[in-house]
Image (cartoon, rainbow, N blue to C red; front, side):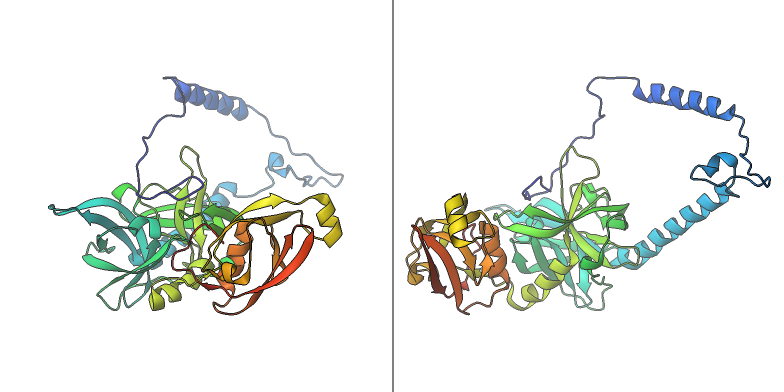
Length: 391
């Protein structure tokens, strides 16, 4: 779990009171609630009548006792909510697994180093989890919901999205289906299932509090379309599914903000569904590479006006690898990249975003400012062997 960037192994934080010193907050709150209850109980509610003698119905008509069977209605709503959660847990719970990882140290047996969660996404034994749960681990073991423990192997990983795929040698397993994260709405029910702090098959609920967030992965790339929600997560929840009320996986839980309450993050299901087939087929996600190191830099107003630019920032080329596509294309240190294939560029993330979808080996065109001149250079991205924080 991490704050802005995603950290590696799961760690447990101490559970502590929100007060700095010992206090009697609980007793004070209980006394206050009791006093309020006594006062409210003594209020004499009198309905406000209209000219015809019928109760006035307004935005505060609850004071007129106009809602019949309020307690029963609330109970019905709670029952419906509970039934929805129970159905989801019964449907998706068997597909959620505990992931235990360890390293084999020289001259020693394999030791447990950490734990996380995962979700089975195909009956042939494919399991999706977080890359930071399994990265660098030599031993991976998966515990099913029924307690069955199976060895697992890493099929593929993508540090840029903090996702990884494992596989166990088993068939006919229960599995979960992905939903469409683009169709989500803020406020809808979110259900997290995982194994926080080693407590298997733990369920927590909340709501989607924001969509379209962005977090930095451990390799520095920007993970976009992050889901923020309030379903409580703890160390060990990483890699578990975030599920909607219909039992569809809408995210892979990945991070929390330590010491915060109700601020949890999940990688969207559409991102996971896009990465999954590439990890299964190739063991990695293929992304383009230019061979430059760059940084965002503000542009002078005169340049913005002279070239009619829509943005007042560009990517300044700090260094160029000679044998890279950028070196062969003739880029120089100090060049200011303002567009690629007529797509505006203001930061390195814009280049990453373009290279993530542009076909490798397909020619592209860089638009840059060199000195006081605007230049267009053809460039052919190659596949990045490792995804550095450069463009």
